[in-house]
Length: 519
Image: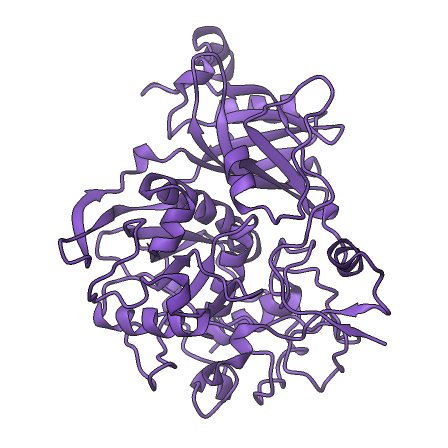
């Protein structure tokens, strides 16, 4: 018999270790005069690692799990909007939140990078190409994507960085030891320092070391399950009527909406148009006619990178979780830089930030016009999403495509929730407790960036991938292929956090493009 299992946070890990950073090699910085490659080698010595700048490109070489990885990285110039700002909140004498100061969120203050993992035998060649300024192109030596945010670099080359990368289909996560311990489950392993040392302030783990549901059951209960544990067919978003009822959500009635939003995505001007999304249904919605027909459809994918800019808010519980406003800001920037890789890889669309609203770590005790900024005991995820959506509606057409709330308050095993297909929806509407706008809520955790990518995927119109127990042709979910329903938890839109979450499924790709690109 199948044993029911609730949606959980990231699966428990079997191991986590300290990586070893071997080198951070900054490419020679180009002056105003272009040099040929021989002249560049002769006249431009590589800058020392501790001088790393936000606009540098470099190779980061690290080892872990008996393997060595060469990450070729360049600046992510689209993470921060040119007119981005950060609002720091405090509490007034009545205990109500108020903006203490607003500062520009300057690109040059954020060391966020993107790139590829290159095979060891081709890395020297790729390094020469990088130095020569040759644009990266697809090559068999490319093992996967990479996203790294560098926090600090000391004179003695003690780099502090976070992010994630993939190599040969396996996703690796890098965190500071402080953040790993802050977000680990009590049953996650302690950090093991490998023989020969390692960077004791960093932790690395990989998705393939996640426990199976049966292994988790054994660890948590001390006994083996009576049968295979079935993955849930849905999560919190499925309980929201707007996400499953075609009478409430017009997208469920007609997925072929106007595609004009896409042509405006890349808008770096201060008043440029930005976009947002909402949660995805897997319940009975009458949407099941086009899921199979457009699996793998990529017609309409941008040929040049587009950017969806959005606002991000952090509630008091999230800020407290990360030890204050600076820690919360640092975490959000790393999360968005990493989550953007999923969209860039699938759609050639990146994620960017225009506004950061960071609350005081002490939750307000007085009245507030920010009803979503409350302690965990005062609101569950569903109500927090509704409150946040109502607040978003008061901002009007502020140019943001989405607003996303980072909270320190999961509800039981639920770690995120969003409204389905609400990009460009700046107004709010609906009944109390069910107020809809272009919003989503994600919570802090060990694999926070995957939760954010999942919820923003809902905002783009992605429904959940089908899970075990579904029936081909009878479920409103995304099947693996035309002949197989169960997507086996391999993709980012799985209704539960599983080891394979790294890309959107071919079904998600095809159906999101059908909804928003084809007319």
